[in-house]
Length: 499
Image 1 (cartoon, helix red, strand yellow):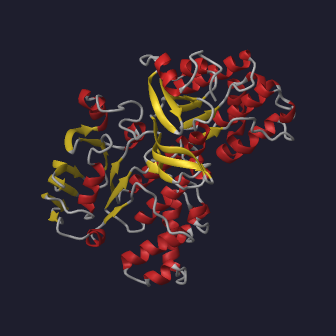
Image 2: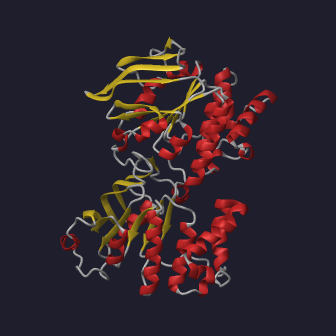
Image 3: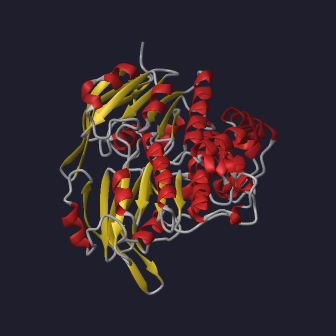
């Protein structure tokens, strides 16, 4: 039986460097196949060659036995190939339904692109029926008339999927559809793809970093490393392969991008510069202590990392998605939670009302009770004071409330700025005990702290800031802390010196 897609010996070279070398894959009709591997393995390059965005230097691509490597992307699209991209690409000012109409009319070669993009071509009954069918399939029926840019990142990715499905593809390339999504959104995306596969009309080649996501969806998996195929077969067998498990970051999210990456970041406040070409990475599930003297730039790093401050140069990426210049709510939707220095509570509301505000939005009415129970389990003191006005709590209790509100949302990354500032030692110990449990459950932590002993006991890696730059660092059990602190101009007293 002829495979729906057959790629044989695909090779691509850029400036003398091989991005792909003799890569072969197959995808059968109505099959979901995964493509995984470390960053730089060649996955997106392979997608580009298969979809016609790039021309392979060698190899053959066949769709149902017909060679297509000489065809342009739009010609391949008309043969039934559709694709989404790593970076979300939506039209500003257009509704969800409008996005689907553009795709529908492009496939049927009806209407005019300019009129479609400006919303001047209203859908007829047939177009509306086709759009509503796909919107229902992917769970966007209630959002059909909302502007797409007003949706969360997760819902925006579903809009991209729906737009691709409007092309009625026989083969769909999905490039990291779970990238930047929180756990709830990732589960929702998996459910949407399962419903698509149940239709039996579309085969999917899925490029992905999230291993549980791949395990749930893919019948077979290919693995690339350094541009070469190193494994292929049933998904469970491939993920158990020792060569695959030895790949970089081959844990829960195998070969994932850093949960946070600041690259060459400059930032400041008006004419005052605080950061100069700063580089910082936090890996999935890692706890990093960021230390340094007053004015070193630590709080500025935290503000840039959560989207509260836009850098003047460099990039800020979350789970491999460039969010530079995006508003703070986009960082929050990507799973970044910032617990800033100070006490961020609504003083005139009760403790429970402070928790209900984010919980109702995140979990809906049906999930609020479980979320509250989780918050009170994390911080029993907060539960004991649930009916008390938040403004009447002690400083430590307000800190606990802030953290309870953040941690129940199960962030990908928690940025904690000066958690112990002004707290009694017993409260500080309780807070750090909870952070250790959260770290062990898989949440990444970036901890800015004046009490170095607490931060270093929690973290696996220390990064030292001085004058807006990273000047030292390493694994906490390997670095010479006295040398590190001396480099940063910090007293080696294990505690009170930094902020």
